[in-house]
Image 1 (cartoon, rainbow, N blue to C red):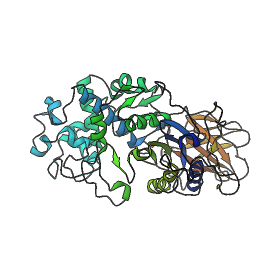
Image 2: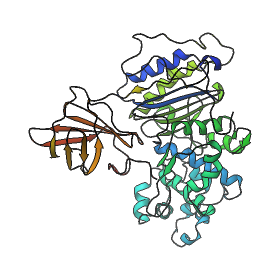
Image 3: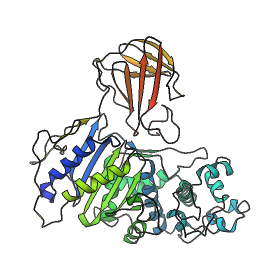
Image 4: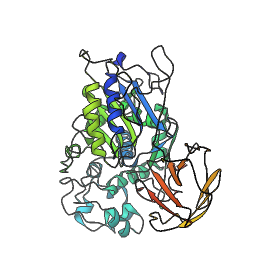
Length: 469
């Protein structure tokens, strides 16, 4: 493997049933709660299938939401290996200036390993309580919210736990998470497109906010699958990989794949382990299959997306020696549902690779027609931050932000906002995030109604739907 490039191969050359990959794509195309934006499948360190659903594209970064946590865990593992962080030290010990503010014995005893495993002793998410208690400083507020149980004994998915890891890495390194990861992870893996916003006190939150390409997610998964080694160079200790991905605490959640235990910012799965983020951002690491699956999406039904992987993709990743279906491919025809191709895009180049083709996201239906004019927010408008929409033949202006329109209603623009329209309906796809906004125009009343298909977590404004630069 070259130092910064994932090699490409055909499914058959790596013992993969291409038909199973096709069946996965067809299955998710018919699900109301699953919308894939990208998919990469790796076997034996080779990319055997990759697909982007236009207007999403390989070079465009995608917001990861909580999949960001697995990158934060990686930074922690590197800091531990360098002797900068001690897992058995208390969180408070890294911030002596807060010593006089933290009076609760339980809070004072929270260790680094506890927050890494979401086991701070709190019985539920503390984000809002910590934000208020800290006056905007989430770390200070977190340490001022007394845990209900002994740290290390109970799991709660708790964003300030990960935030504490980011704060610790910033304190010991003198920089941000991005600063810390750039020479240690991003540059060795050839990850050159990334962004991570900071909060009001200047910290990158760690629990969310990272934007990278799908291939960057796949590379991180391959690094873990290979025990922390990339191109013959050890970036993470084998001990960290094992420790971060094993179960440290019972999760006791209703969904099967969320009830199998939690590691250090990794979930245990029915098969292997994973990092995941809201709306279907996934990095699945499957040691038994020697495989990695990376996906970005706008999927409110994350469990259904994962179930489809286990039903269709997992059997395609047959172990070496089982050639019952390995290397076969489904023929074209009616087996694939609308919006999905029967053959995944293959990497360009090579004797057996096919030219990459993209599947397109569904566009508004009806004639490609928009009635020019100025529209104000009317009944049914669910996006209070959008107050005015102006349309003419070539562009739509939403609260002063100008976006190009195509002549025929097809996707227009190269990002970060791409538009499509039909029958006085405009869709805005924010391709650096999972999110889409639909604006329905009422020409007779001069009003519009806008709504998010999936509500952005955090600041639900148009300006916020971009990778931080």
